[in-house]
Length: 98
Image (cartoon, rainbow, N blue to C red; front, side):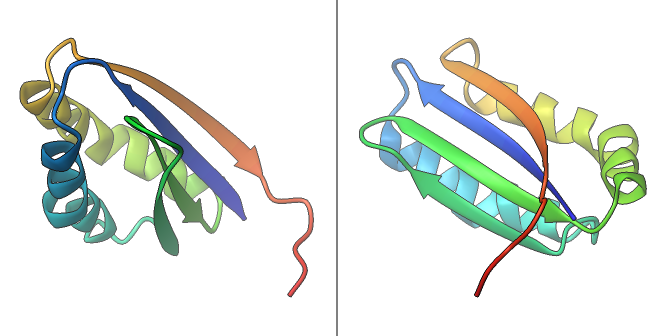
């Protein structure tokens, strides 16, 4: 299992507009691709967010990045042009406890 993590720091954007876009459109549309097992959207203080996409394997992540990510990134940029800092990382889950 892998975690594709996207961290966003807003500069001037309205936090409520950003949250609405992410929760009502962007993330549900990404979930609809069927590439991810689970998604969580999190906030760290003011204007600092991350989304963690759990993906079963590298093949599913590659499929998302090749076939879907370009259109989602373009749409995101249209809604929030030059107003955000975005960082993407891929984490390997070594072990989990419940």
